[in-house]
Length: 131
Image (cartoon, rainbow, N blue to C red; front, side, top):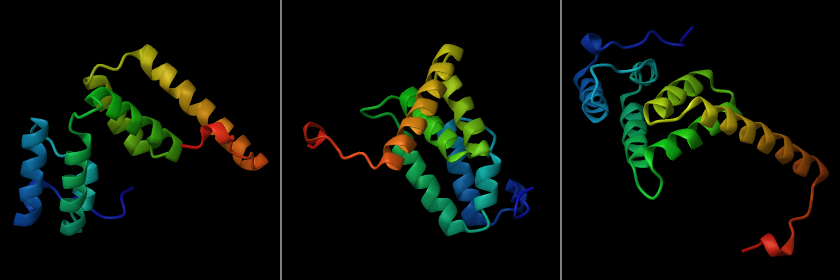
């Protein structure tokens, strides 16, 4: 259950509607997902977060699929169910296959395990790894 009632488009103040309109135009959809509707309770955070997401997730040195898969990996590590669902859908839309998803989750699981082991053992960083 959400902390706040979600703010639907028809109930949104003008500043929130402007962000919703940009989300729909940028994503070429008629849908604003619940994450943005929850953030709409704080229009400043809504706008700042949308502008950052829009900038970071646009194709650059990394293509859209890679960015979505990285986002999905971090979301799985942080155990954000909403983000896992959202970015799995976005990664699939960008072309992620079932085999890629399975391999990604295997890497995420392995990285989390070895990260915890290295941290627990307080392993000293090899000199050759230092840049």
